[in-house]
Image (cartoon, rainbow, N blue to C red; front, side, top):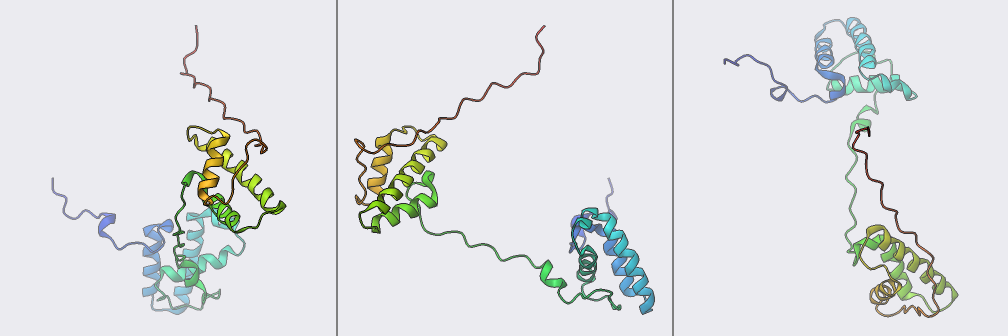
Length: 201
């Protein structure tokens, strides 16, 4: 089969804003070539109306007209010479991608407990004895037990939590299980079996 002359999207110039489609981009490219400035503006206004129909949900945003003209400016590669009806000086900053977020680098000893518990245990290591440390210990221990239940890490008995706390605080916190009482944690009930969709006769 002769496929010469076929036009594939993969062979075309990438679109700056694909949500508007290639036909809108072609209209903008054409508007740039018009010799008369007033004619370019009339053409631009028609294009903006078509852009609005391509992305109708944009109307839900306040000041969406400004956004459409900003997008037109970006898609014209800043080459459309018209008397812009809106200030497009800030158009590019809305199109710039945000900088990637830095992922936390510090390691967590037992990931099923998460970062918050890890930070609490580190804080407990430095706290002096007293009612404040006792209360934070109580809150942390109960959170750890809830985490174990949620992630289903085998044994969720009190001794497991007490052992993890002692290990992760380098022995600074020792739960006395003969006096310490955990809050009751409800195990997740097993999910009901899905129906096969067949009706019983």
